[in-house]
Image 1 (spheres, rainbow, N blue to C red):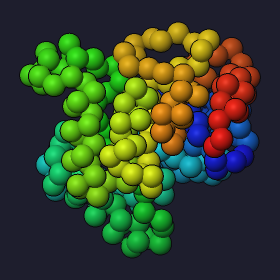
Image 2: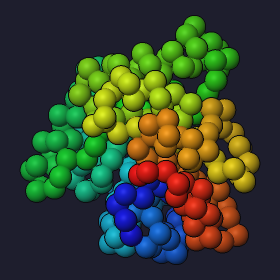
Image 3: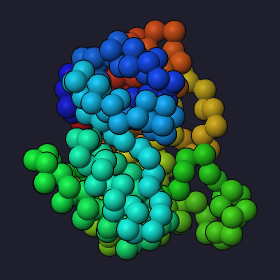
Image 4: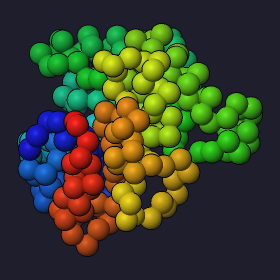
Length: 239
């Protein structure tokens, strides 16, 4: 299992199905994503179970509240030993900074590496029209850039954005930042409810460091074969 493998499998499945799938994918991927569906169903124990299987865990709960509440949540998440966690960049600089500082302190207290704090910019299911409906007059592309700059100011370790914006983001956040892209669909997969998407290879070439891929793998008849097919798509990339 190479840590250079850029795929993060989104285990957006009910309960034990997610763990069964993770068991199948051992040795094929290094990272798995635990989102709201799985975490709210199984609780913090699912993180421990996935870590015991040898995975790095990206806990994607998209924290967004007053800084004090986000600081407490980030600390609790850091103590679980996850590798990445998310906050909404739209929560502002103070909120994001509270997550970064609190997660770092909490991890140090329990002798763990600090998780990377990623700022979610604009959800990949949202387009310009969707932003306008909630009062944001900027285009999705411009809003992503605005929020990425705020994340950088707050000291976040990276951003979550669609692969469509990855190239512009990389020129802002620098080479050391993580650029995690959902909305990645292999050439053979349906787009589903994602509005701003790209293929795995195109996302990596645009500057993505990690690719969040869910249904093309989790809904596949043979998830292992699906992962292998995606890796073949990107094997020409120099990563």
